[in-house]
Image (cartoon, rainbow, N blue to C red; front, top):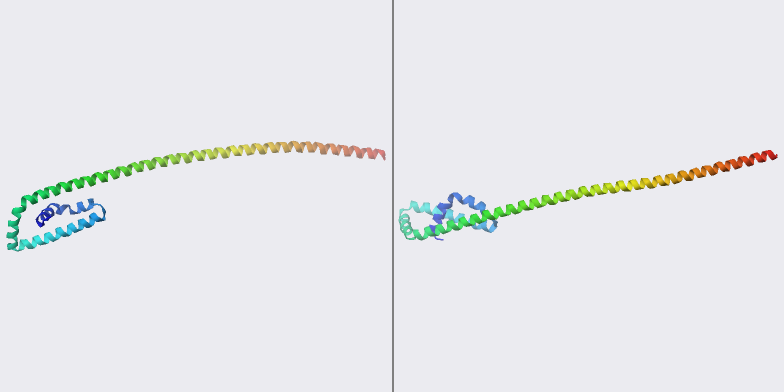
Length: 176
C-alpha cells in the first residue's frame, strides 16, 4: 500500500481500531494488526509534520491529486474486503456459538439420561436387596420352624425317656 492509501485507511478506521482488534483472531493476526497500528501511527506523525512544513504540504498535495482516484478505488476495495472479513468473522462466531449451544443441549440430554439410569439402578438394587432379604428371612423362618419341630421331637423323646426312667425307678422300688 502507498503512504497515501494508508493515510486514507487511517482516517476511515481511526475510530474503529479497537473494534477491529477485537474481531481479529489468533496471535498472527494480532501481531499483524499491531504492525498496521504502528504504521498508521507513524503516518499520523508524518502527516502532522508535513502539515507544519509548507513545502512538504504543497508537494504532497500535488502528488495526491494524481493518485487520488486510484487510491479511492483501492480504499473502496479495502473497505469491502474488510466488511466481508468482519461479516465472515461474525458468521463464524455465530456458528461456534450455535455449535456450543447444541453441545450443551446434548450434554444436558446425556446427563438426564444418566440420571434416569442411575435412578433405575437404585430401584433395581433396592428391589433386589428387598427380594434377597425376603428370601433370606423365608429361609431363616423355614430353618427356625424345622428346628422348633426337631426341638419338639427331642422334647417328646426326653419326656418319653423320663417316663421310661420313672417307670423303671418305680418298678425297681416295687421290687425291693
